[in-house]
Image (cartoon, rainbow, N blue to C red):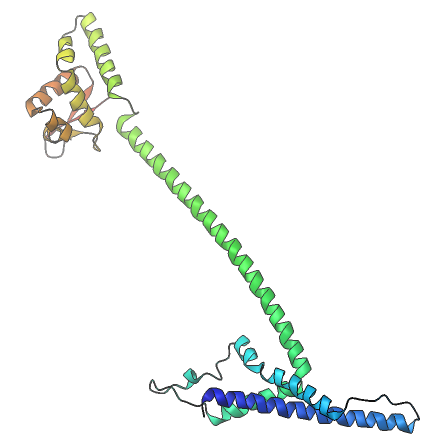
Length: 278
């Protein structure tokens, strides 16, 4: 016989046994009550006939007996699980005999105290439902808070990233400026020098070589490094596109250095490196 069939037979038998026991106890109490009333000459109310009372008792007890597995589930008990008794990866077809006897005793108790047992189960289920609902609400609130915390952290990260980028820009250039503003500043400085009769970078060079100057300064300006070697500047795509050679780059940078617009240093390898100072 299969394990499930055994469990069902035990619950059914326990329900019938418990219901019949309740009926006989109830029948005895009713008979005693009737005898006492008759001896005192009191009028006795007619009680239900036994063939109506007995099925009622058995039905209630069966309900209680078949509710026992639900109690096991709520208690998270695996007493009736075959997986608990696996030996060498072989699942048995039956539980140990004593387990069935324990289960039968539990079902008989539940059947005998059927009304109280069912009332207690109903209260337990209501309490469990309330606890589950509260847990869901708390989980929902926690999820919302977690989402808010995630958004806040993301905003903080974005803000920090933006501040870091601004700090890097400020450290590198002092401030952001357009190439047009840079050329305008160069023209202004040169015009002051020319008006004061100073020699150096010819004013005509700005007109004749403006595109080269713009390209070279733009290559330095857009670089992630503060200072670049001549070869590094010449290797930039914008420089290659304009076919500006290293000699032209050096000539223009030397002229701009005289005007205090670019600065030359030596790196650890003894190479000249150039950067903007404005």
